Length: 184
Image 1: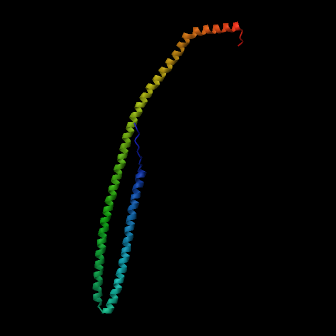
Image 2 (image 1 turned 90 degrees about the vertical axis):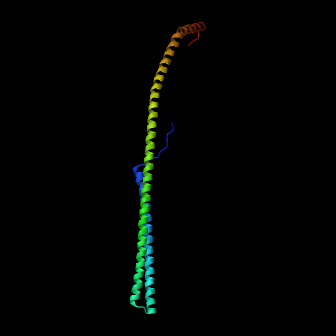
Image 3 (image 1 turned 45 degrees about the horizontal axis):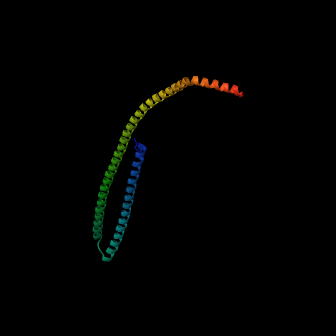
């Protein structure tokens, strides 16, 4: 049976993945804060420019201080509306990001669990296969022992059967050597 390829994921791996996700979240939050700060600075410059123009306009038109206060108050109310709208959009954005992050963590946990479940299943299959191999090995050892015993018996049997013939041949060779006077 082919061994299934699985990747082991440790708690440290999972923590590293999650930390990377949180770092990305923090980058997004930092970028948003930086854009907001830039927006506030631009708005402040616009407000400053507007106040300067308003002051110049008042001097040119000889408007009263009450008129200037009324226009400035209106500008602040508009700025407050803009800030309130931005705050509301930011809150919604954070909630959406939190939901997306939670879903990704849940998906990652489900994939991790599935991986562990598959590994456990594969491990059981391997254990079963190993038991079969162990049983087969016992039978092979017994068969090898039987074969060794039979080979040993065959050797003894052949030697017993041919021993008289070997003695006769040895005697004949000695006789021929004596007749021919061959030195060993």
